[in-house]
Length: 253
Ligand code: PGA
Image (cartoon, rainbow, N blue to C red; front, side, top):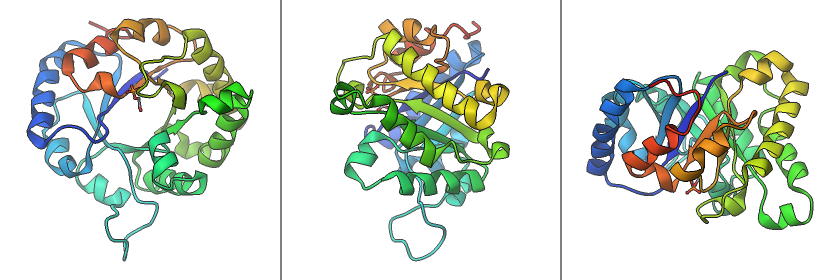
């Protein structure tokens, strides 16, 4: 079982803040193990920060191009990220799905681009409040997974991390209860098992995201099918982020 806690700064911090944050994490990282720690930074900082990252911190991008090299102004490819020492990227975040045209087919192309460059894809899925209230949460998440993940050749699935992020919980302060999260995570594990077999499905980290913070992390991370978290607001300060990771039962201190 691989345990992962990943931060997502979104459009926050300046370059000096990014460096100060890494400084604030380095001695803590040196003393703690058992959980893979990742952080998704704004793209302009990646080439500077990925090589400077302290031991035990994997630097991610928050996006990647669905296209390869060529005439695509403003886009950056998976190979470019790899050449900067970046470990992978978040794809399919609900903010990008809702506001930047990342429909399922685009998200799938981004996953493929990352896997072709041997980078990690942190694949986000999750339903809106309206979809949950109309009883469609599982259908929505399954559909997202079908186009994005369940079709991936099994020999490439080791580079995929799934993050279940109910849209109604992201940045709202409303967290899914651990039972609500575990229910969806169990369904996700079941679909992964159908697609890849039980052993492979168990090895795929399935993270919870959405207002996860130091006060609720332990409860969420102790659920059977929750292997860690994707953390927005509570990843911005090293002490909060450390508090979240300290909620993980697999952390060795
Ligand atoms: P949040 O964001 O922790 O601020 O709710 C999570 C995310 O969007 O990944």
